[in-house]
Image 1 (tube, rainbow, N blue to C red):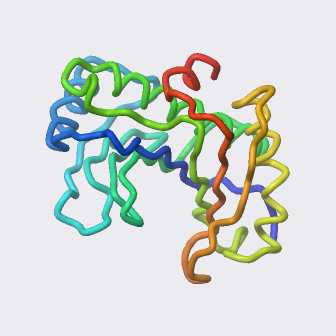
Image 2 (cartoon, one colour):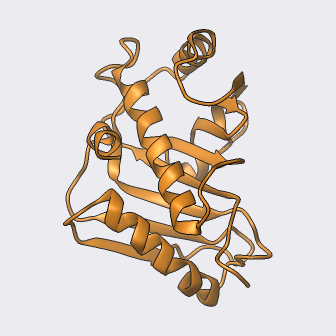
Length: 193
């Protein structure tokens, strides 16, 4: 087992006051592709809202798949890393967390969802997408935790951060919950990133 994990996901949750018609994301993401609003190669938009607890509305890029989705009954912004530049696991975690926060801040600021979508930046899930290198065990969590702590220290400087393993089915992905004590706006996290 190694902590050198290339494939993983991050999810920032929507705050409870979020009330939005999700078809709006389709229009927004298509516009972002046309206008090249994000770094990287923007490819397509996919609508999986019909899939229960599925990926929802996705913006597919060459480097990352972004989705506004409902897995585990929690609505939020999900990002799946496919390619990136970070050489260490900590750098890869930081890179995806910062890119996802930037994506979330850009989305929140869009006039079509402004005031309707609010993402919590002070808590996110980290999900390992490599069951060979990071099985869903305490040992694998202990191996990845120092990288998560180092990344969280840079994302939330001067704040007390808790990192815990999500108690889920052993057949599910290894998932960690990274959280600070106080609420953080996703736009604040994106600016600090």
